[in-house]
Length: 303
Ligand SMILES: NC(=O)c1ccc[n+]([C@@H]2O[C@H](COP(=O)([O-])OP(=O)(O)OC[C@H]3O[C@@H](n4cnc5c(N)ncnc54)[C@H](OP(=O)(O)O)[C@@H]3O)[C@@H](O)[C@H]2O)c1
Image 1 (cartoon, rainbow, N blue to C red):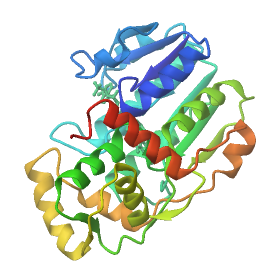
Image 2: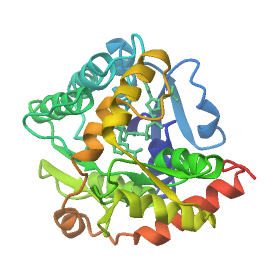
Image 3: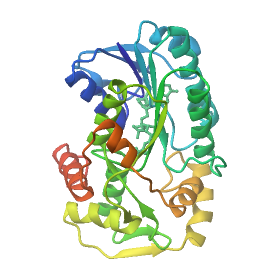
Image 4: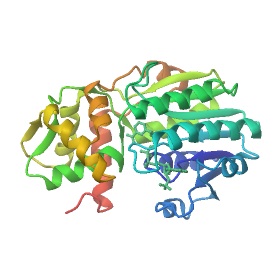
């Protein structure tokens, strides 16, 4: 049995589908009242109620499991949903539960850009999660993911913006390097991480193509068949707006942390992961096209 936390999320549902297709028995930790519970309905997945802020629920969920895949994290803080409580302490609770259950492997979703001295709250929490896993003594694999391309997440959010806005807004110069990875490749990587001999590795989970942020957004617009001019919005203008809006709404167009992380670039070396896990990575253009087609077919990119 494999416990997956964050199974109802954009990435989690693809990992669950990959595990189920490969014949694994999957248990999903599901927040009571999760708005996304229905995404797992109809799949042969055992759903157990729980919250990463509740160590008891994690301990019960991990009992009898061979491995834990921990995906839960938040991208933005809102009120008591803090990086500290959910991303950092949530991971620490998951590790403690995995240890108590005596699992054979722990696989953690981290993020590209984690360094020894992170400057954003998001990255600080990811670093704490990584440290908890590394200090656990559990055989583990940590993935530091880049932008993940699929029917959800960034492509859906920016796709909606591209469709609605008269121009395509680009933060700053737009020249920041990114290396997005297809969600299907992410799912295969997580499955293989359960299957290879444990080596306590940290892998960059990045795609095969390194492009600028503006080129990435351009690829989404092209796949959507949208031709609009790009408008570069100086970071000096965006930062104060982000600082204000993130206090007023849980879903601002961007947060200060996100602008900082974007400007720092988001690239890595997928070579060790390709070698050790035997992956073939999907080219960016194909991944974006497939994501846009799936979103369109599901009516999630509007008319
Ligand atoms: N998407 C990307 O481009 C990207 C890039 C790099 C790294 N990552 C990492 O990949 C992981 C998954 O990201 P995602 O895009 O799939 O995020 P997502 O769609 O927001 O999914 C988050 C998942 O976490 C669950 N969750 C949130 N708070 C919880 C809590 N307190 N207790 C239990 N479950 C809780 C959510 O459950 P509900 O259904 O109840 O909300 C959902 O299943 C995260 O660690 C993220 O940092 C993502």
